[in-house]
Image (cartoon, rainbow, N blue to C red; front, side, top):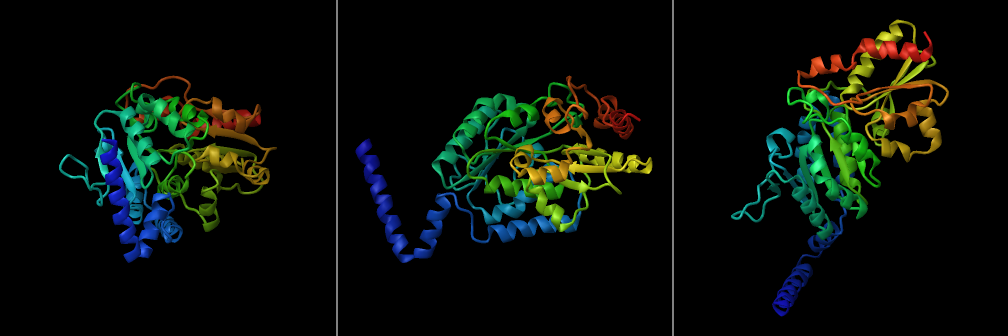
Length: 370
């Protein structure tokens, strides 16, 4: 069997060398892509898509924004190999260029893994190790628990596996606490060499996908919402700073008295709270921090310019709170969720657990001693 395998490999190599001589440019491109290099037009095309998202100013759920991004990036990246653990209609991991692999279709670019979150993640790792492909696969964020050891191995082996997780918080609503992730984002952030993005709108989603594709020394978790999220207005400089993991999304009128830090769906809440606080005479800055590990790698001068060390801070995220105290410090506060959720519509749950403008304003006033 080994002899036959060696013969087949030798025959394939001979065919490739003959092809390479006849088509040197295509062969060179094939070798580059097998080595994990991106197409020559990648930077221009991907940056152009980010700009287009900003100009369209649409406000879908970030899981839909993710699917739109796949539709834009997919034609640029024939090495994409996508899939989902039985949740394609919910994860929105397919796009119009997808072709499902089956026993009859060997030249596809999409796998329907079934209810096998660990199997999917382990296969993705194997594909990444093989080279020539950029694997991505989706499931609900809650079900990342079933794949945890494969995620750890992806991080340990520094693989370009892209894990797509939707239904990212109590915002998924009526499925209840068994399906509502509370501690998952925090624990994934704790994993060495795992990068995690939780974008707040279409623009941050496109930047997150761009960063995941470009990262060739480790895996990325992309965390997306079920519910629609509004577009945030930004300058070109702010869009450029998204890639730094955290940036000033909206500054105070005058010197900030408080900095609100948020991610994902809670950015909308932070912006509404800023409006109310400023109307009440409290100058408020909003920082969007979609990727804490990216932000942590920035130089100290940049981090200080964003978070302002001497200014009080309040972080807002619909999950466990411990990880945010390294940003807000002992004088700050975190509005989060240190318990399991409940089954109810998303709006009712956010109100029940204190993710309201009124509670953010009250928390800020308490921090400021007012």
